[in-house]
Amino acid sequence: MKETDKPANKPVAKQTNNLSTLAKQFYLQHWGLLLSAALVLAVVINLWPVLAPFVAAFVLAYLLAAPSRWVHAKLRGRIPLPVCAVLTFFVLLVIFSSVSLLFIPVVLTQLELIQTNLPQLIVNVKRTVLPWLNEVFGLSISVESTDLKDRIAGYISDNRGTLAEISTKVLRSGSQSVLGITGFVSLTIIATLFILPGWTQICKQFQQVFPPHLWKRAQPFFSEIDTVMTEYIKGMMIVVLFLSTFYSIGLSLVGLQSGWAIGMLAGVLCVVPYLGFAVALLVGLLTAALELQGFLPIFLVLAVFVTGQFLEGFVLTPLVVGDKIGLSALAVIFALAFFGAIFGLVGVFLALPLAAIFKVAYMHAFAKYEKSDYYTQRG
Image (tube, rainbow, N blue to C red):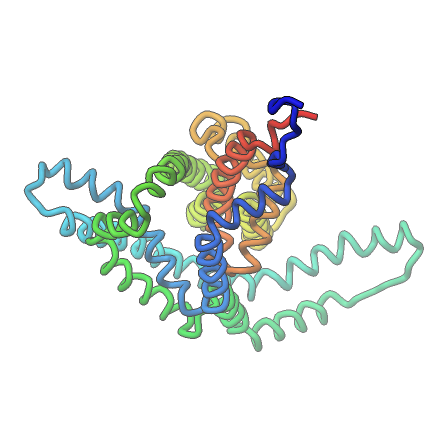
C-alpha cells in the first residue's frame, strides 16, 4: 500500500456557521462593551431623578455648540470660543425667558374666563344637547339652568387654585426631579454653563476613551448620528417657526385674544408628534368655546389646526425635514410611549432623537450582519 493511499489521520476541522456560533463570537469580542452598556443603562434608569438635569444640560450643550461656533466665526476669532458659547447661551436664555413671561397674563386671563364663562357654556350645551337626548332616546331629564350655573360657578370659585397645583404636579412628575421644576431648570442652566464652554474638550476626551482601532470603526457611526441629528434639528427649527407664525396669525384672525400665545405653544409642541398637536388643539378649542361662545368659532379654530397639520405633514416635513429619521407612525407612537414611560416628560421631548439614534445603530448592525458568514452561507 502506497503512502499516498493511506487514509488521513488528522480530522478536518468543520466550521459551523450557525446563529449560536455567530452570537458567541460577537459576545467574546465585545463582552466588555455589552457589559458597560448594560451597567450604564441600569444606572441611568435607577438614578434618572438625579441625572435628568445633567442629561438635559448635555443635550443643550450639543444643540448650542453649532451656534456658538457660528458666532465665533462671525467675530473672526476676536472672542474665545468658550466666551462665545456662554454669550450665545445667555442671549437665547433671555429670549426664551422673555417669551415665557408673556404667557403669565395669558394663563391668568384663561383662569378668569373659566370662572366667568364656563358655567354659561355648560348651560348652553345643556340647552342644546339635553333636549336632543330626550327626543332621541325618549328620556325625561330636566336640570334647572340657574341652579346648575350657580353650582358650577361656586365650585370653580372655591377651587380656583387647583389648576395651577395640578400643572405643577404634572411638571414635577414629568421631570421626576426631587428638586421640583424650579430646581430642575436651575440645575440644568448651571450645568449647561459648565459643560458648554468646554464642549470641544469633552468631545476630544470622549474620543480618547476608545482605542484607536475601535474608534476607527465607530467614527462613521457617530458621524452619521451627528449628521442626522443636525439636519433634523435645523429642519424642525424651520417647522416650529413657520407653524408658530401660521397658528398665531390664524387664531388671531379667528378672534381669540390669546391666539398668538396658543399659536406659539402649538408651534413649539409640534416637536412631539401627535401628542403635541392634540394638546394644542384641545387648548385652542376650549379657549374658543370660552371666549367666543359659539359653534362657528370652534369650527374656525378646528379648520386652522387641520390646515396647519396638513401643511406640516405634506409640505413642510417632506421639503424641510425630509426623511432624516424615517420612522413610521407606529414607531413614533411606540417611541413616545417607551421613552416617556422611562424618562418622563424629558423622554417625551427626546423620543424622536433617541429613536433616530437607535435606528442608525440598527442599520449599522444589520449591515454588518448581512456581511457575516452566517447570512451569506449556502445550503
